[in-house]
Amino acid sequence: MNKKNNSSKIKVNSVKVDSTLENENGWNRMRLRWLIDENTVGAEKGVLGRAIFPPGASHKAHFHENAEEYIIITKGRGSQVVGNETYEVTPGDVVFVPRGTVHATKNASKRGNLELFFVYSGAASLEKTGYKLANA
Image 1 (cartoon, helix red, strand yellow):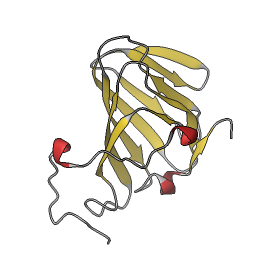
Image 2 (cartoon, one colour):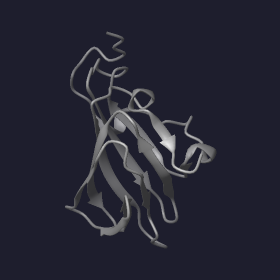
Image 3 (tube, one colour):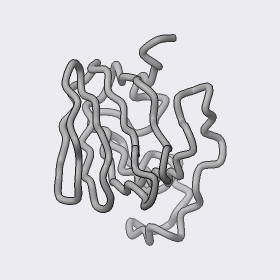
Image 4 (cartoon, helix red, strand yellow):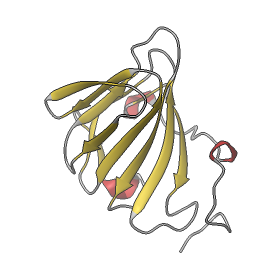
């Protein structure tokens, strides 16, 4: 177990925003924190992350070959694509993305952040989810 944190408790704002995520890989101006994964607490089967999308920010169409994803909207308004469906999402919405299904998220608002938590089930890191852009 490669555990960076000696505790199983995480303070959301104490985890640094991932500065390595690049637009060319689908990450358009998102601020993302990896809260629970194999590196932070030694998780073996899942990931919990927090994403903030400022106005106009998005996560391009992508899929995960090895993991399902659950998205919980906590603040703001946006759109969530899952397969052939596009949903308007607001606080309290929970979205399920089956393994291998193309999905994308966007904050189309001109003011206010879209904020959400997401869970990858079945893999303990982004790499292990089999993350791929849909049009790559």
